[in-house]
Amino acid sequence: MASIQELKDFTQQVRRDILRMVHAVNSGHPGGSLGCAEYITVLYQEIMKHNAEKFDMDGKDQDLFFLSNGHISPVFYSVLSRSGYFPVSELSTFRLLNSRLQGHPTTHEGLEGIRIASGSLGQGMSVALGAAQAKKLNGDDRLVYSLHGDGELQEGQNWEAIMYAAAKKVDNYIAAVDVNLKQIDGTTDQVLPMGSIKAKFEAFGWEVLEVKEGNDIEAIIAGLKKAQSLTGNGKPVCILLYTEMGNGVDFMMHTHAWHGKAPNDEQLENALAQNPETLGDY
Ligand SMILES: Cc1ncc(C[n+]2csc(CCOP(=O)(O)OP(=O)(O)O)c2C)c(N)n1
Ligand SMILES: [Mg+2]
Image (cartoon, rainbow, N blue to C red; front, side):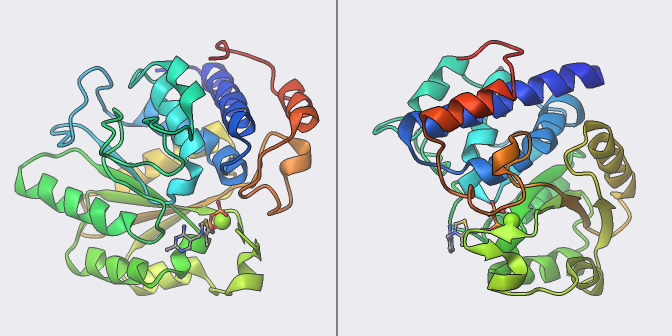
């Protein structure tokens, strides 16, 4: 078990990695990545039972995580590497030709920790549900986790999966939605208002809980423990995680502008000064 301070330090280094990765290639998605840094850190460092040293695609007797909003790959790659899946130095190859760290995660490069290609939004829940059902069929009592963007919920395939999960009582599954109220071109309300996401999941038969402080490590741990306690009761579980896009870098917060834009040299320097090194840069 890591201390809260250790988890905060880990997250701060993850923020640096995200910023440096996208800056180096002048492309990628820092906004959502920064917003989800605490959540993915807590999952891999505190909550999931997983084995970084012996990665295989099946993940039998391990908890599985599927990143559906694949554009936030920088945060995923950073947490995976710093959790021991692959060398941290490989973060320097982000988005380069022939790199295993493509802009959106893919499987055929064999990067340890990646079990699905994602980035074409809306598909991750369907895959996660298949994995969760496979665990049940195999008598494997570990859990499946996934993460989705709020804008991503506008993709129709999600609602087919949400309906299926409840109908088939996939209760070994915890899906989280990154509710930052923003997406590529503006607020979710400007692009396509969805009304109450909570009411919608509930209407489909899910157990829903909210983590109002989605960038607070302790609130996330409490939310995930509560979610775990709700599994096994015949219903899939949804966590609505209220985050701040661009969290931890003052000029990237409260705007959708950094959804998919890299900082320039000066902006990088400013952003890194707000997030001093904790575990060592790659
Ligand atoms: C099927 C599909 N349509 C469109 C896109 C382009 N796209 C990439 S990210 C994004 C916005 C997603 O919003 P959200 O899930 O809220 O992510 P956030 O901006 O909060 O990181 C869109 C439309 C895509 N990747 N896949
Ligand atoms: Mg969003």
